[in-house]
Length: 129
Image: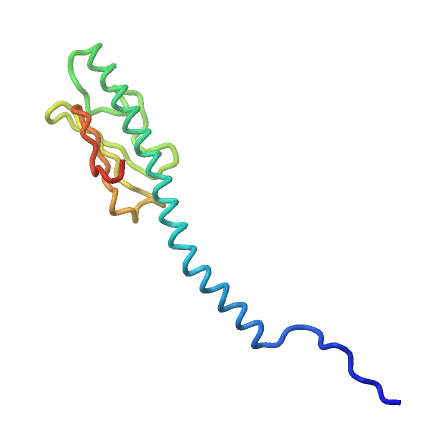
């Protein structure tokens, strides 16, 4: 009586390499899409900060009849966004303009940095708002 060998156990090297290749292809497609999504999501932080600064600036103007560039002092607000993705600056040329410049993990978002909002309500770059 001869015995036949049992079923083969495990995976062959070829099967493992095919699996790794498939995972690599999926990751190569998914990671850039995820990175773009995260950049867009972080832009909401810049928008929120700029709109809050406009509110504080208008309140300052009502009390002092002038605009200020001192975000930290006069407006009592931070000069970087809550999570550090943007640095915030102000200028008082032609009313005021607030600028959010990408920093930290958002620094490579060159398409939407800097984002600005001015006294006339002009938002730039428009495609990023």
